[in-house]
Figure 1 (cartoon, one colour):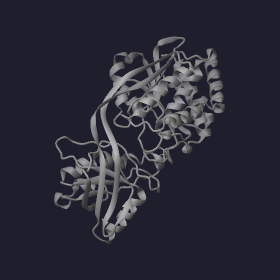
Figure 2 (cartoon, helix red, strand yellow):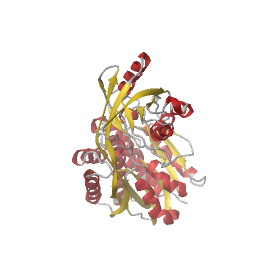
Figure 3 (cartoon, helix red, strand yellow):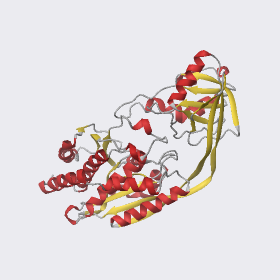
Figure 4 (tube, one colour):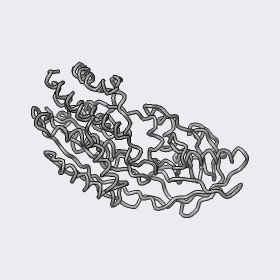
Length: 432
């Protein structure tokens, strides 16, 4: 790559390490808006806030694109051990679950994993509450998530098919706090829909100790469910490219969050870092070659809904989407750089990597997914890169009441910004 572009990227990197802009954005978002549950007044408030912040930062173009989706609401939730003795346990409904219509009571039957539940005879499950015990392992890259998340997403389908009256899982999380982790689940229309909930890890441990001693009856009360449709928006801002303005470097995060915390890690930090990175390119001496488009995606949490709307709206312009990437894995330091680009681009990305390597980042692989909200465009053929964050502690807080601003290290956020602004700038100037 040309020396002048490398030097500009290094200057931007160093400026990012000194900038408080990403912190200011996530602090303001989580304080002035708070949690941004899809389908709530706070969702709309978040959209208006994001649009105004983009405008205040001076982006060349700011606009909204509508996103419509089914509206799921959480009103209240609770659970208790009824027998062998009365104890309150901490529980949260899984996103998309049906309610219990009052307190649902049933004997608990233990399964180590969803695979064990799937293989069980229906006679062991029928009329009971199926409990899935599998615990998530803590890793830097979140590799422990995949082996357990099937219990959350498909547990109700598998248990419902076998005649269970509800399913309860150990939270998909690595903490030992009494904060249960929510997250989306799915039904099969051909299988009875049963309520689905997650216990905090300590309460799951308590349930298992009781089960070792004998039969356990659980009472579950979930006032939740779908109530029509809702319209929100993807919020989009652009820095116009100086060389190829019709071509796009697509970056961003998702604006929505679950309702339990304030969505600081998931994904206020990602929105803040990518917004700040693009804003740093508004200066005349660091203009991008291609247009940098920042998208604050709507309703990622309930199924990448804003991302799929974006792909539907812009799929015909795939040829002009040069490369895409999302920040959506908390606010830990970036530790690895992965690419999913053509062989022709790889030499330029190796040059770009040398700019971010001093930040403590290692070179990863060649099969980057780009991030959850990038998947729909990647599936159409868009190239990607990924600045992977240290997720060792991310799943301590993921989808819980504990996802709050105090979990963000401002210095780690600066390192993220330094990596993002330099990589986005260099990507925007790469030759095809």
